Length: 347
Image (cartoon, rainbow, N blue to C red; front, side, top):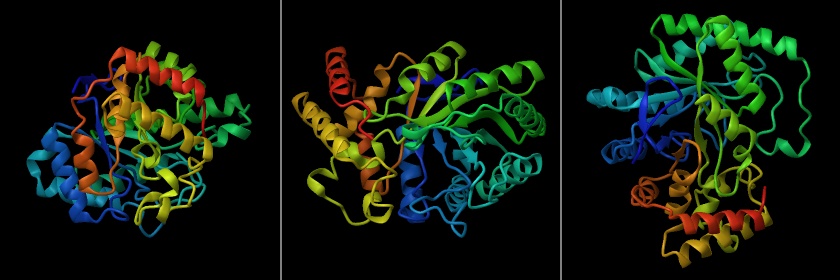
């Protein structure tokens, strides 16, 4: 794996990460700890979680469980803490933990300290704002997106948030900061306000990015590349669509499609299934596993993209890890781009 720096933070990680959003719901603790062991043994150092995890569904009574499971693993594998980069997130307004409370100073501090307790650590390596306090276009909201216009209020709020984040960093609780489900305008304004106020810089943006979801490829790609902000790509297998397990109407027991909303968060569409079938056929022609192709494709992008692989079971993770050294050659990357033109924005 390549080694990449997260933004300008000085924190370097291999170019795959492990996501934990199923830990404590679909994935029981024993299996979760096995996955963490496997990831560490394979050289994956970035472990991503969030205070609201697990998902499918998100519930107040289970929020924080994924962090707790990771924290118990860190405690039992004491030497592992120095080898991994722990990333977590604070939920924005409309969350199951604090309702409409967003990134108020008291909420930021409370959420940070609660995550530290659950993670059983004295520092968070990368703390991310899980979604903006203003309207955004992620999770299929792009089809009806109405951009906000209250610029002055948004910038003033950014300054307030950065002030609190600076204090948490000074206290040694957080090493670096990032965003999630952000826009190009929002990313650049966070950077501008940090420069203007002396607040901490946003080093990464965790947005959805996969063969089936390429909203990042234009304005966000330019903003991130020019400003040295790293993409942490969530759902790199499109919530399992790119594995082929939902082909021909299949709904495997215990899968996200079976236990979730039945639509994979809006991803399960006829056009997405057609696109997935085309990518799966292309992988077969190339003599490549479709999971390995979908993950290795991130290394072909003209910007840094770290896929955050999530697996319900250790067996799924073991299969994905077999593709750690797979490379997508330029001719195959060109054919992928051609398929993207034939199947644009399938959900």
